[in-house]
Length: 149
Image (cartoon, rainbow, N blue to C red; front, side, top):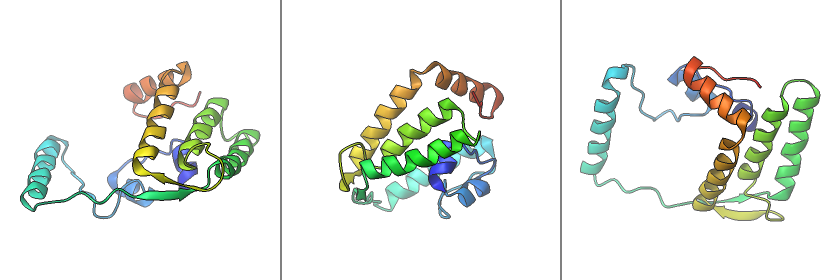
């Protein structure tokens, strides 16, 4: 479900919808006034600093590797065959599958948050070089809705 929402660029139209989709946690701050966004973010950051906030200990995840990539790949093939995803949707989804599966490193293995972030950066940079991805980013910035190309 999460993979499909991300891969198919399911966009939340509000913070509450974002929570329902699992993009935001129940405790995440929500600002209802765009003009107060910076003020509220700064107040929250200062509150954390004053409370001697310590970030959580970095975690690691046991991820499926190649078998996860293959399983998600079958889902992607089904979406394309059914006309629910374009070839570019499939390209994005396959790269997402690599990240969510912990990379193409064989069988089930532990992956740190830092390794996940590095995979995500590599995939983003790769996709940012794709003309169709650039069209999608420009369209989202100009029209505030996803482009299906």
